Structure formats: structure tokens, C-alpha cells
Length: 150
Image (cartoon, rainbow, N blue to C red; front, side, top):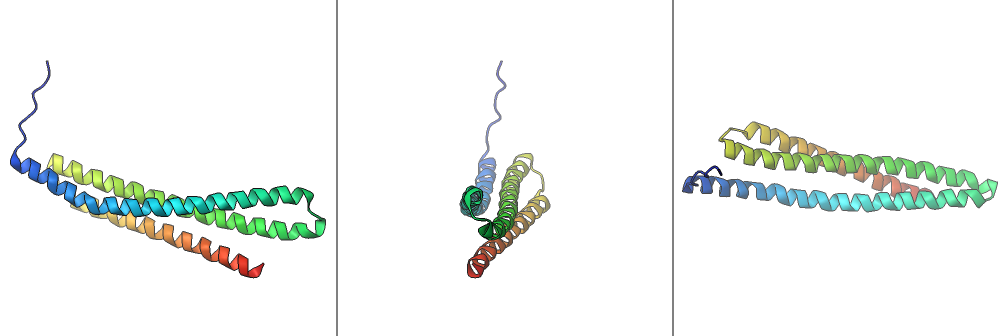
């Protein structure tokens, strides 16, 4: 026999709609994080493609050209690590934002004060996002510097 659902009061609907309004800003943040992650993933793919090209070229190149290819491979490896760190931090930021949104909803449903938890999660998410952007900037600066040196 199904359990009857409790009637939903106007106050409960008001509380839920308020929680939905509060979660709209973090959803916009998730969109921006997702966009940045897409850009970082594309850069990582370009780095991997370039490394594969250089590996293929290394098999047929003259010995005097090999050191230059190895140097570029080293730079690509450093860039790959930076982009990996950036993607990891960006993904962590997105996960923390998702958990903060879920915590807001759980707090509303359970009538619990989750303000400190949500604030802490959001601060951690912003820290992770800042770290992602810093790693991404470092990778870009390394890429530009390697072009100038070539």
C-alpha cells in the first residue's frame, strides 16, 4: 500500500522556490567553469597531438636535430602537467559547487542550518577555481615563451 504524501504548504513551496533562486548564481559559475574546462581540454589535446608528431619525427630525423626535438618534448611535458593540474583544480571547483548546491537543498528539506558548510564549500570552490586559472595562465606563459625562444 503506497504511503500518502504529506500536503505541501505554501510556506514549503516558498522555501523551495527561495532555495532554487539561491542556486541560480552557482549554476552560472558551473557554466563558466565548464567553458574553461573545455578550453583547457582542447589545449591538452593540442599538446598531446604535437608530442605525437614530434615522436614520429624523432624516428626519421638527423642526429643533429634530435636535441631540439627533445627540448621541445620537455617543454610540452611541462605544459601537459600544468594543464592537467588546471583541469584537476577546475573539476574540483565544479564538484564543490555541485556539493554546495546539494547542501543548500538538503538544508532546506531537513530544516537544518547549513550556512557555514555552504560558505566553506563555496570558498573552497573559489580557491580551486583560482588555482585552475593560475595553472592555466602558467601553461599559456610557458607556451608563449617557448615560441619566442624557438
